[in-house]
Length: 214
Image (cartoon, rainbow, N blue to C red; front, side, top):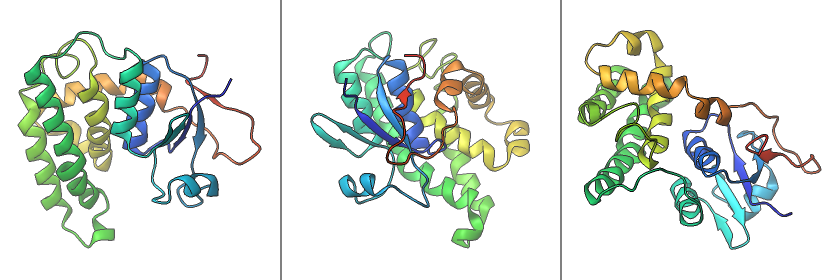
């Protein structure tokens, strides 16, 4: 059987959310873990931009994580309960906020030396974005008790924000809902399953099916 191929990198938040969509959909793909400093020429030949995730399926190449998620959602049921129009609009707005402004400022907070930046300045901008959604969280997941698209799209970035200074994040008093939201994700079987370690893929390797045991 031919499976779609997913080029991925374990810690990349964009690749993480693509893998979460695959896991939640009970989907199967061939996983090819990428070493970002030594990207396989097979991936670069189909996606010269050189970023992950990249999915190759019978219809062609999908080069963006949100497009991978939407492609899977079009063919598989991933999330319980339909969202209403306001929730769909909120999802789109917040995901865009995280993909653009939050990610931009997160990079300059985490890698301040690389960008010759003041990390506290960029941390504050990220905190302001988190405060925007602090009171929107309605349960274990953003909209209640069931995971939705918004969760798999923004939680990998919030996780990275915490990693930049875990002691500060865990003791910061102004975003308790965000902290509880992230802690639930960090202890979830979903994260455990998508964060398993794999050796970088090389041509000739045995087929690696993701998720394991599917």
